[in-house]
Length: 83
Image 1 (tube, helix red, strand yellow):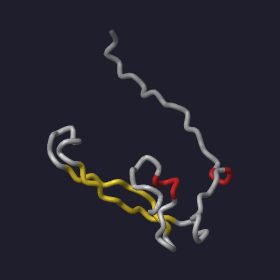
Image 2 (tube, rainbow, N blue to C red):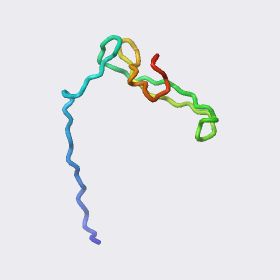
Image 3 (tube, rainbow, N blue to C red):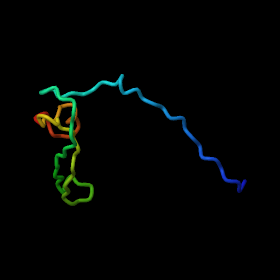
């Protein structure tokens, strides 16, 4: 085994052209800007893996204009579609 320092492995960087990506807009008002929002979920001790009640923040994005959370951002959160 050599004691000579090894050169770091460099992975080639891939660039993404964002001009070709879809821009998501609010279904209600057509705004393109969103802000971070949190829904707070309470986990009962029965469902919790630790056996203790817990509070879990669920991050979602809400419209910066009208405040609505688009349904696509609610998928899998258990929050429904009423935002």
